[in-house]
Each structure stands twice: as structure tokens, then as C-alpha cells.
Amino acid sequence: MTSATTDTTTTGGTSTSTGDGYHHGDLPNALRRAAVEVIEERGAGGFSLREVARRAGVSHTAPAHHFGDMRGLLTSVAEEGFAALHVASLAAIDGIDDPADQLTALGRSYVSMATTHRGHCEVMFRTDIIDTDDPELQTCGLEAYGVLEAVVRRMIDDEHLSVDVDEVTWLCWSAMQGLVQLAPKIAVIAQARGNEPPEVDALIERFTALMVDGIRNAS
Amino acid sequence: MTSATTDTTTTGGTSTSTGDGYHHGDLPNALRRAAVEVIEERGAGGFSLREVARRAGVSHTAPAHHFGDMRGLLTSVAEEGFAALHVASLAAIDGIDDPADQLTALGRSYVSMATTHRGHCEVMFRTDIIDTDDPELQTCGLEAYGVLEAVVRRMIDDEHLSVDVDEVTWLCWSAMQGLVQLAPKIAVIAQARGNEPPEVDALIERFTALMVDGIRNAS
DNA sequence: CGATGTAAGGTGACACTGTAAAGATTGATC
DNA sequence: GATCAATCTTTACAGTGTCACCTTACATCG
Image (cartoon, rainbow over all chains, first blue to last red; front, side):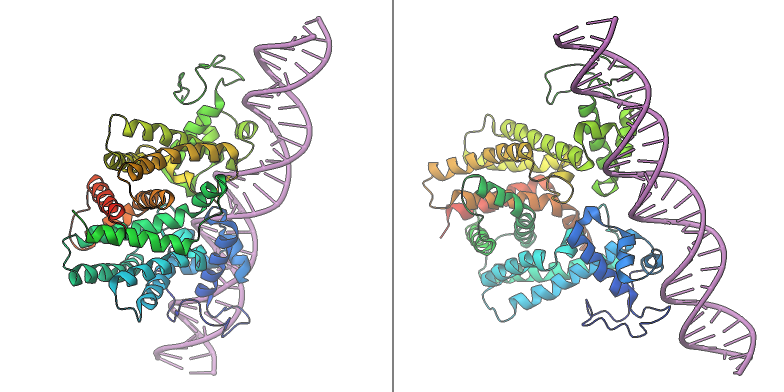
């Protein structure tokens, strides 16, 4: 259902091959882009399918022909988000040898995606507005997850540690995901005691350092 | 219908003085309760102020007189959630001496609140639909946070560890918050490789154990 | 070629939503 | 007993998602 034949995640320019007239050219991508824009401006709560159609310059029912449903469009956005995460993760560990350093790089990449792809991230884990059973979505999610898991597995193998791969992977993932969601609250807390909000990058480094120490010294 | 007389949280016990007729008696609490009900049924995305009013048995504009706004009602629900978290946290560590054990108990309590108070939790960190600047909300949040921070501080003091209190507190919090949000995905992943979804309680124990080991052996 | 089928997009309608303004009802206070 | 503030209702309006149906453009084949 979530279609688009040629999809390089946000096509370079606003090509619109057959731009004029009835046929838009690449409406699915244009709608995804507009959707992300709306979410980033008004939040997932203020999302509006009609506003998306308006920004794409089409009638308010046009999205239905490609995504069936508001849930369908948002699911497609989430899928695009996981694909982008997959790419970013691979790029993050590229050229780094030490798995522990790779872990830090992955964390940094993960958290930075929450700001560079804020619209996508605001939707990717919202089980109430996307279709979590969509097989393509699950595939994209698993692919992104695979990168983190491989790094963890390599670290455990290299250092002959006796911890469970899944548990460690999930811990690292949870800590980063939690940091993303809690960052605003953390800023409030720091501000409430007169401190300035902490640098996120520094926090990531400390988090992974603490976790790696824990993994290596697991009892 | 949904007009139970007594309400545990807030308001000592003005039990629906004028039950029938024009004045509801304790509409704010009834609305909060209905709101949580709706969110738990349809998710935060399917929330409807009119539906809430309907379930409380009042006209659709009645909520505005108490909460001003849909955002106001949801903010109040979030506030109630943080208050409940505060109470649950205090109860969780009661009778436990070892700070590390207290940490595990706090984690268990935190994650279990995500199911016992699912409606509240689905709203507490949604910066796009609640008013994060609300001073009462911030106060409630800080109070709940204080319990976790105190436990971490005591552990660090007791064992003369040389790690930053804030960093450790934020790590523990992030890991638990991430686990809450990622639990569905984790289940999908486990299921995708034929395993049965892991027990959450066991995960919490492993997470805290790994983190505590990391904190104690911080380099 | 022209006819025809199909994908892509548009119109109009319907029930539902949040919010604002103004009216109705109650209890309390002087 | 009159006034006032709180509480709730009625009415109205603009905006929303989705449905059934209509229009346009393109490609394919006789």
C-alpha cells in the first residue's frame, strides 16, 4: 500500500516531472514531505490531512488515492524515518573500528536524528496513529535495529563478555530513546536549579561510557 | 453513570454535594477520569473533548469552564499522572534499605505505572498537546523526579563513588522511559526471530544490574 | 488510428471536532 | 429579598477525516 516506485528518501529537488495539469508527477513524496513539515510545525497532535494536501497543492482527497487513509500516510512517514535511521546508522559507524566507539557514534547519530528528522521521529513510535502491523514498516525497523545489534554483538564477541546480546542492545536503545524523549524535562530540571541545560552530546558520551563499563563488568 | 462519589486523588472528600441537576458536584475529577478512559481506549491521537463531556454526562462545553481548553484538561491529566508517580515511587522504595535494590524497585514501579496508568503516561511527555510551562505540572514532575535522584545520591554517597549524580539519575530515568516506549517494538523483534516476548520485569532487573555495575566501575 | 480501461485527481456531502458568545440555573452573600 | 459569582447549557461557526461519485489524462490494444 505504501508505494512510490522511485524513492530515494526526499528526492533532491522539487522535480515534478509532469508538473502542470491534473497529474502531479510524484505526489506520494510531496505528501510525505508536506506531512513532515506540518508535524514539525504543529506537532503530531496538530496534524491535519487537509493541511498537508493544501501544501502539496492538491485537493483534500488526493492523499487517499495513494495512502488510503491518514494512518496510511503517517505509517509511510514512519517507514521513511526508519529507512533514514538505517542509513544514518551505517554512516555513523563507518570508519570506526572499536565497537565501543561505534556504540557512542550510534548513540550520537540516533539522538541527532531526533532533531534533524524531528517530524519523522515524532511518529515512528506512536502506536496509536500508525499501523504497526504494516510489514514494510516492520522490515525497515528491523533493518535499522540490525545495525545496533551487530555492533553490540561484535563488542561482546571481541571482548569475550558473558552478557546477553539482546539485553544489552535493548538497554542501549532504551537509554537513547529515553534521552530523546526526556531531553526537554532534563532541561527543565537543570534550569530549576540554576544550572544551564546540559550538552546532549556530552550526555550521550557519559551514558554509553557508563553502560559499556557495566557491560564489561557485568556480574 | 460514571459519577462515583469518592475520589482518592486531590480534594479531601467533597462527595458530590449536589449530585443531580445543574451542578455536577465534582466535575473536574469526573472529566479527568473520563479523559483517561478515552485515551486508554482510543489512544492520545483519538482523544475527543466532546466524547469526554459525553461520558461525564455534561454538555460539550462544560470542560472549558474548568480547564479552559483541551490542552488544559490534558495538562491536568498529566499533572495527576506525575502525582501518582510520586506516590508510587515513595511506596516502591518503602522498606528497602540497599539503594541499588531501591533503584530496581523504582524501575519496576515506573514501568508498571505505564500499564496501570496507561492513559496518564500517554500524555505526560507529549509536549505538543499539554502545556509544559504550567508551574503546577513542573512542580509535580520535579517532586517525582526527586525520589529517584535521592536514591541515586544515597547510593553514590554510601559507596563513595565518583560519578555525577545528575548523569546517573538521567541515565536510569532514560533507560526506563525508553523501555516503556520501546516495549512493543522489542516484542516485535523477539517475535520476528521466533522467540517469545521477554518478561518486562526481568528486563528491568537486568537493565538496572548492568547500569549499577557501570556506575560502580565507572572509569 | 479510435475506443477503452485504468490510474490519478477533483467535487460535494456527511458526521464529527474544538472553541467562542450568549443565555439559563443554582447557591451564597449582603 | 436582591444581587452576584459560579456552574452548566444552547447555539453557532470554522475546520477535520472519510465516503461516494465524477472528471481528466494516459496507455494499451482492436
